[in-house]
Length: 365
Length: 202
Image (cartoon, rainbow over all chains, first blue to last red; front, side, top):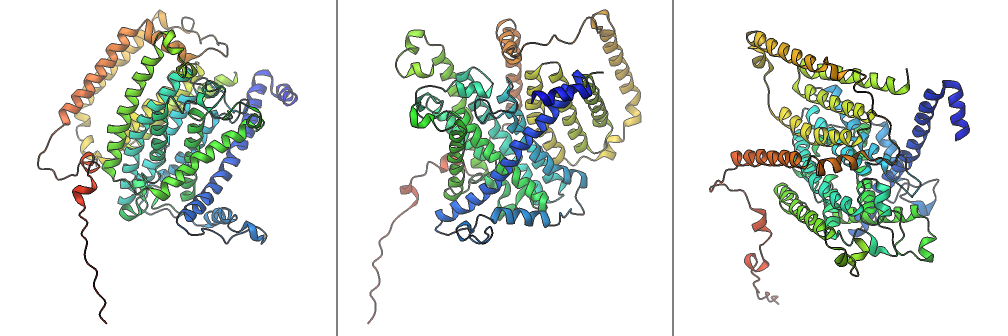
């Protein structure tokens, strides 16, 4: 790496060489994150169809395979779907606002991918190790809503517009509860840096994870995450029986697929954040030999897969919420819970040293 | 010209162009979106000044929340631009006068001796451990705690006032109450009746 950097500096001068080197190396790293992520998204759709199928006593996709290998039946399905989506025509409705119609999917996927920049996959493996990492993630995820609103408005269709309005109100409401839940994590770790948040959960066992002192916040965060990604049982934004498919009714082919990719990569992002904030990120559950031998990256992946399974399980299990029930849950249940918990946590942290050193309490405070 | 200068000029150009666009574009939705672009480029400029907390908060608060609601309202309202433009020339002298006064005031402040490039140089680069967020938090909650609390109370009062102005209790409304609905027990709604099964006729 240093040799390449020196060559850049020789060709372009010290200042520009360094900047151009950073730019190129970062571009390579971005590809190294985004390409596996998109593969994960493709196979998450496959996992979703298979898991929900088995929960409903069906088989799910079992046709498309690679090179006719029988035990891979079904595993070619996401690839086949992607090829189909790429081949399809992108229809732009004649009454639509063409520029914004094309811009909307881009505005949806951009923040969904950009938020991954600060996620640490293991202690050393992080693209941007910035001090305000948590704030950056909050800012990026809050920008995803523009794509949805613009898509609904630019399609010039009542169904799309209604879907966009519902989705926007829902996301804005649940963002508050999510933010407050993260404030609690922030108070425990005393840092906005995501690497520091994971290191703050280091200890002998999984008792040290923030899952236990912040259990209500874990639930609030997970449920708000489901609502934030417009997934069932909070998927009123695309209620098939009322407003056809919500904000992306008029999108077809690759433009629709981009919305789809953004939704699923947001799901993986929420699962990753939950595992980092509450389940100790790359830390093993017990700090003894068989567990510590497995690399941290694998632990993080296992935790992400565990949370993602919950997302799919919710979808197969719960009936959909009505719109006013969703709003009630967000504003009248979650936000008061989080506000109270912030005060309680602050009081515990201000207790005298002697009380905080009592067994159990001394693990976290 | 260094790399940072190039980025600064690009961001400034986008910022000025989008800010001009906000007030000249005819479609109010475009104008709201251009304001979003202006906020984001402004956050980029602040990042160059090492004010990462302020920059990210600008995106989080203004782009992520305030402008979403703005866009919401602008899209829902069917604004008739022709009617809005009707009184333009009538009010133009008045508006121009206010604009001139504002330009004069701002330039009096900015052209004073306290705002030269020597008086306000770019901030000295800090080392890696320096956290802008921590420093801001320390200042807000120690030195400026009264001002901060006052501002918070002011916002709270405004919020309570806005809610109080729009809150109406109507007795005759038919909408369901979710908290009553989820407290319903099985016994209130459901009556299990045992019916003797019919005998099959031979």
